[in-house]
Image (tube, rainbow, N blue to C red; front, side):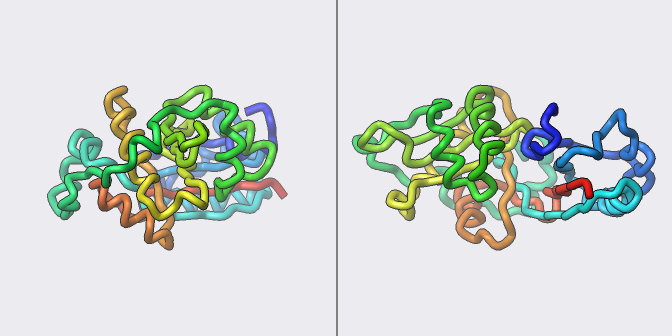
Amino acid sequence: MTDDLDHYTNTYQIYSKDPQNCQEFLGSPELINWKQHLQIQSSQPSLNEAIQNLAAIKSFKVKQTQRILYMAAETAKELTPFLLKSKILSPSGGKPKAINQEMFKLSSMDVTHAHLVNKFWHFGGNERSQRFIERCIQTFPTCCLLGPEGTPVCWDLMDQTGEMRMAGTLPEYRLHGLVTYVIYSHAQKLGKLGFPVYSHVDYSNEAMQKMSYTLQHVPIPRSWNQWNCVPL
């Protein structure tokens, strides 16, 4: 976390046993460098009051975002089995439709492919996001489909929080179920490596919510929270 402006890397995962009384703890400079552009992620929306209070004390602006957290059914069975009791899983068996395997080859991303991800990632398009994507590709498991020209046409990555992120498809290959196939394949790879499989989806992104249902990913509403903090 050496670049004060790199909120992609300056990311904190926080869970508090006492979220109503954690302001002093969060305000410690030994814990969080509030002089940086940073992100805080948590499953606890109740942290918002403490973070908003700290924004006034330490002079930074903050924006809270809530999205739906999805967990793969196998991950939910292991970590939160009670969640499955009230969920109706897709009759698809959690598998995507078949693809043309003569045209598309399942593979992993190379760091030279980072520019593609950066171009189509909603939160990318700049030098810091490019470096962040490169590090993710170099460090964590990835999955992609190579098209007829031998370059990625669809992909999915993992970030430093262990979350599946940055999925994308070239415009000319969309609406063919490729991203569903890639995310399924990536989840299978991560599961075999012992990773919990999870990701978040915007409330307005109905297409990705439908895909998550097809793959039997279990929704946990309001459990993905992020606070973007920028010093004034």
